[in-house]
Amino acid sequence: MEKYGYRFSFGPWNIHEGADPFGPAVRPSVPFEKKLEAYQRLGFDAVQFHDDDAVPNLDDKPPAQIEAEARALKAKLDSMGLAVEFVAPRLWEHPMTIDGAYTANDPAARAYARERSRKALDIAQALGTDLIVLWLAREGTYMREAKDAARAVDLLVEAINDMLDYAPGMRFAVEPKPNEPMDLAYIPTIGHAVALSFKTKDPSRVGVLVESAHAILAGLDPADEMAFGLAYGKLWSVHLNDQNGLKFDQDRSFGAVNLRRAFDQVLVLDDHRYYEQGIVGLDVKALRTQKAEVAEKHLRNSLETFLWLVERVRSLDRAAMQGCIAARDYEELDRLILAHLLRH
Ligand code: 3MF
Ligand code: MG
Image (tube, rainbow, N blue to C red):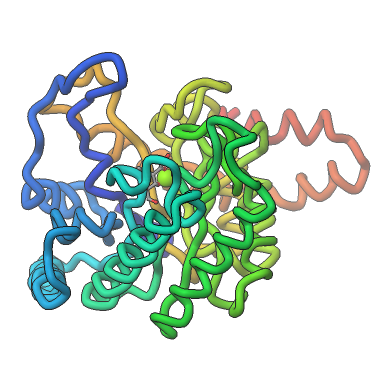
C-alpha cells in the first residue's frame, strides 16, 4: 500500500467491546497480544498508550516493577516492528479523580494526579517515546459555581510545570475537548491549549493534539484547528475521526460523515508537510452493531480513506484552484473541489 510518507497509529481502546452508557459489551475483549497483531495486519506503524494500557494496575505497583514491565513491553514492540507514539496518563477512572485531577478542589486528589503523571512519564521513557498526551478529561465542571475557573488555569500550569521539571526530555500535547465527560471543560479548543502552553515554564515543549470530533463538538472546523496548531509549530499529533453533529462523542470512521470536511483536514496536513513531523492517529470506534470478527474495519476504512484523500489532495489542479482564488470566483472553486472529489 502506498503510504505517501505517512505513518499511522491507534490506541488499544480503538478495538472495543461495544459497551455504551446504556448497554453492556456486545463483543468479547480482544487480548492485548491479538491487538498488536492487528496493528501489523492493518498496516499501522505505531501504538498509542494510556499509562495503564502499557502497565495494567499501575497504582498498585512499585516504580521498579512499573519500569521492568514497560521495558519488557518495549522489547516486544521492537520485535514486532511497532513504534510507540505517545503515553497518556489516564486520570479519569480512579476514585481520587472523581472531582477532577490537576484541578480538583481536594489537594490530596491533585497530589494523586501529579504522582500518577510521573508514573506515566517513567513508562513513556521506558517505551522510548518523548511524547505525552494530556486529554484533560475531568478538568472542568458539572457545576460552574463549584470551582474557580481562573484558578483552574493556574493549577493546570503548575501541574504541567511539574512534569516539565520531572522529565526534561519530554514534550506534552494537550488534547482539547469541550465536553464529555464534563459539562464544561477548562481547555475546550486548540486556542485555549496554545494559550495554556505559553503560560508554562517551557512553551517549546508544550503543544497540541487535534481530534476531529472534539473540534466539531466545539462548533469548530477540524482543519482550521489543525492549521492553528501548525501555525504555532505545535501540532504534534492528531486524532482523526468523524462526528455527526452536536451529540455524544461518536468516534466515527474518518470521512464517514462528511467527506469534504475530511478532505480539508488532509489538505491542511499535507500542504504543511505534517508527515515530516507527526504520526497520523486514528481515534475511531467500531459501531456497536459490528460483529466481533469484523470489528476492525473502522480502522482499515479510516486509514484507507485518509490515503485516498492524500491522493486527491496531491492530484488537485492547483493552477485551476489559484485561478478561481485570484478571480474571487469561489462558486467555481466549490465546483472544482466537488468535481475532483467525485472524479468528474
Ligand atoms: C476521548 C478521547 C480519548 C483520548 C485518549 C488519549 C479515549 O474523547 O479522545 O480517547 O484520545 O485518552 O489521550
Ligand atoms: Mg482522542
